[in-house]
Length: 164
Image 1 (cartoon, rainbow, N blue to C red):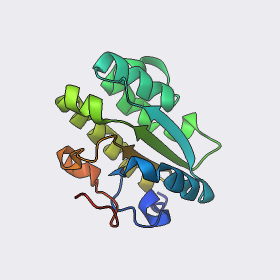
Image 2 (cartoon, rainbow, N blue to C red):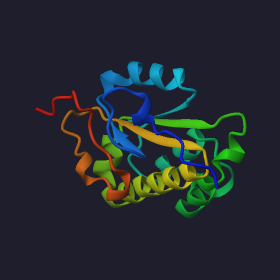
Image 3 (cartoon, one colour):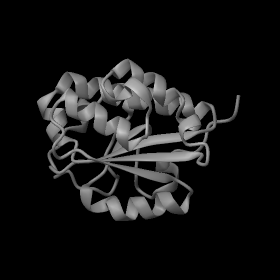
């Protein structure tokens, strides 16, 4: 077994947490630049119109280039995420940047929690195998409630960000 790889919070100043993190949308460019400097491949997911399972699963599977039934089945996403190093053999670090998750979190809170837990679990499992996979949420609303994320997500805002 390979040692854990550094997480995105280890390479981006003032980003706190692990697995599934939350940052203000205006920080995307700085976070993306720092992530790229440290060898992360970024995959963007535009969540603005994603308000249902039938929209979120295909968008998530497409953003991560997941095969098969991952575009309509949560269990298939779980399985495909375990194999991310196979789908991205030329990369050791992958960052999912989910822009505007607010609408889906509000429209389908239970599935939102499930998806975040799936992403967090995959991140933790892959890190122990030497592959970095994390998700940064970039909500539109400054009132986005990241406390609703599952405990395994360990999400938090930037230390310097005023939640006001």
